Image (cartoon, rainbow, N blue to C red):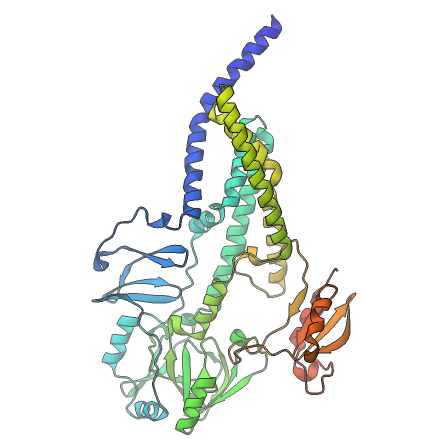
Length: 508
């Protein structure tokens, strides 16, 4: 009798459990299907939008390759505009357009004539300000809620939360609670304390509008203006110990600049205004008369009161600083390592085989047994879980968090934690801190390879075919060498490179 009652009790627990879990399962499945649709279907963000006239639009959908981005439309200075990639698109009679924030086609004669005329007239400045907007670089850092949604709304978290749900409904509530706490804690820490904090540091790094007011020659008088109010064609006075808020062309005087913010070069460089039209044209082509936004002016002179005079060439999203930030934001979100590629290929093969097994199981269960959809989902997940540990994402999250803290202590910032190569070995280290803007390509002079932690012999550039055999057993440290090809780091100003090599440790 006791055994029979036990069987009846167990039989009653199944329907009762299904009755309690099916509403939760329906809500969970619906939310997960929406997540998969948003991540897989490119047109999902615009499914809730309808077409309208451009002048009445509140949202704009922009197709960028395989992705569709939705941007809000706001009204500013009498124009409707939206921001995309540090650029401001303004609505005119012909639709939305991106007005040029670059003043081109000028000659030295025209620049000097503009100086004699007392700068741009106020009506032209006001018209450009209304059309171009503020001189600022908008990185678009998401808020706290948006950052959390960006972190958790991924296929990896979809899989992890599914595994937690699986353990909850099978009675392992303690293990499921621990997993859930680890998932939420790791996700919140990585989203707010690492990713969003790094983006906020980047905004402060490119906060050109936070600079002090700058002297501007306008409408025949000199006045100090906020950097956000500058427009292409303005004549600005470059003072010593200041940071430039826009890209400029020197037309009077000279300046000593510290461009480490852009090029990484720790040695100050000098710029001098051209004296002929030929020097002006060649200087625009090779950048020898350009002073970029974000550059610190160590010393200026040659114009008035120890200052230099420059004409604003580019503002806002057209500056070189904004271009570099766009390159950083368009890099792959995750580091590409050979170990990860092999792991992904192996896991994909096992996943396909498991899907086939799940399909066969569902066919026979539905054909021969009276089974609920809840049981089918449970058994399917039980087949898939052994392929990929649900806590691997948590381990990678803590690893990224630890790596970010270590890099931050050495002054290195990373916008996205997944870009840090985890669980892999470094084969090649390239120390490149010059030529980011001034050179169009990289020139290899020689390779000094090390084995067992010590430097070996120098391989000249003529022996490049030997490099593939070296890559299998050593670390390559590439550097720019002097004419004598001697290992004289101080002569070629590789102090930063030496410091990086001393900090790195290679475990082969």
